[in-house]
Length: 327
Image (cartoon, rainbow, N blue to C red; front, side, top):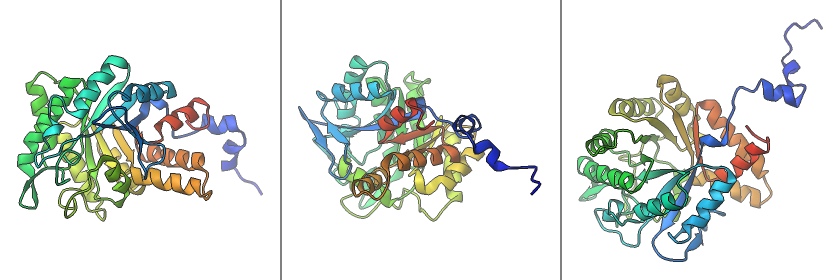
């Protein structure tokens, strides 16, 4: 058979396959989510997230050292306070759990890059992401608290803030507050397209953030909607976001691709707790090969348009990249 074009020519040798690879990654694009909790001498494994822990401040340096040695330079902090109230006051308290973790981390490992989740759900007694009026989350009243939280994080040492609440107008409110206090250079990574997803289940256990009633469908997005994701992302661009995130990653790669093509901002994808837990469970049962599945999931996100990948497998991925098993 006389064939001029033969796709297999470029697949015949590992060196050649790597040379013509369209999607490339390195560990500088990884972000590792970490949970910090009030208390002392706590390193507590999260039952639904095997291998992930809640750390008290005194145990955090050991965990940060492990992250740094793995070759990961970026972390995302989530706080679990001892006290919760209707207004989530520990989210923006000077001595809040995330604020103290930032000061400790900056002192011990200043070379790491510290990003903080800005939301109310871990801090409110009702578990919702904002101020309640009856059983309804009041959007505009929540903006003040989100801006106050972001500012408190930056003043404690955060290099970047990442609002995940999905309130309308929160990027502009945070940008204006940071700028007003002299933090014009601090970037905002917006959870721009965040769906109301069943993939968050293990995280809600990890952070103690499940809503006490109802759900979050009035502010997180309906997973049936694709065009709406682009609308949300473009609104955040207009309000001053520096990086856009799509969450979850695996089931929303079409949306990630849409947003990446429509904007000129760096794109992040969050491989969330449910994705992690499913892989762990499948690997434990011997149904899947953990490393191969994790690598394939990561590549799919980058292939769809991600520049940044948030994952509980960041340490492992960094090692596999260093060894040339993915990249």
